[in-house]
Image 1 (cartoon, one colour):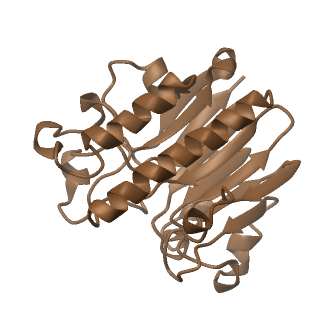
Image 2 (image 1 turned 90 degrees about the vertical axis):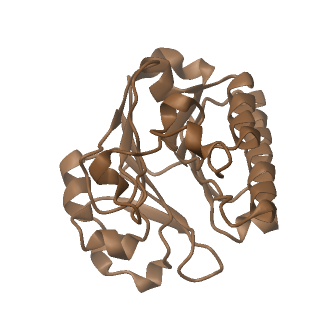
Length: 253
C-alpha cells in the first residue's frame, strides 16, 4: 500500500502546475493534502472527481486559509472531520479516516510564526492530537499520522539549525512536543529508516532556498509502534515542484 502526503500550499495553484499528472503517475492508494485553501465548490470538476478517486474535504471556516483533503480508491469505513474541539476544528486541520487495518489522520499542524499566542495554540494542538491518538491506541487501533507537522525535530532536520533556535518551527518547546509524541509509542518513519540522512520537505520561497537546498524536514509520517513490521519505505519526492513543500510517501507491506 502507498499513502502519499503533500502540503500543496493552495490546491488551485498546484493544479496549474501538474498536480493531476503527478497523482496519476504516482498512483497512490491514498493521498492526503494539507493547506488546500479552498472549498470543494470553488474547484474544477477534475479536482473533485480525479480519475477513479473519491475525495473528502475539510476546509477552514476562513476562506483561502488552511484546509485538508484526501483522495482514495477504497473508501474508509468512517471519516471524522476534526478533533471535536471547536477552536481547532474551525481551521480545518484534521481528517480522520478509519480503515479496516489502521486509522489514518491527515493533519495540518499550526504554524507558530505569527507570535507567542500562535505558538501556544500550536503547542495545545499537539497535546490534543497526542491525546486523540492515544485514545485510538487504547481501542486497539493501529495509528498513522501524516501531514505538515510544522516543526523540525532534530538538527539534522534542517539545513541551518544554529541560526534557527529562536525561530518557530525549531523552538525547544515545539521540539519537545515531538519528543512527547515519540515517547507515547510512535515512530517517525523516515528517521527510523534513515537515522543519518539529511533530506528536506520544505524550502522558503522568499529566499529561493530550494535552489540551495536550504530546507527543513517538517512533513512526516508517524506510525504507532504496532505497525513497525509493516513499514517498507518512506520516500521524499524532493524534485517535484508546484509547492514550497514536496510530496512524500509511506509504503506499507
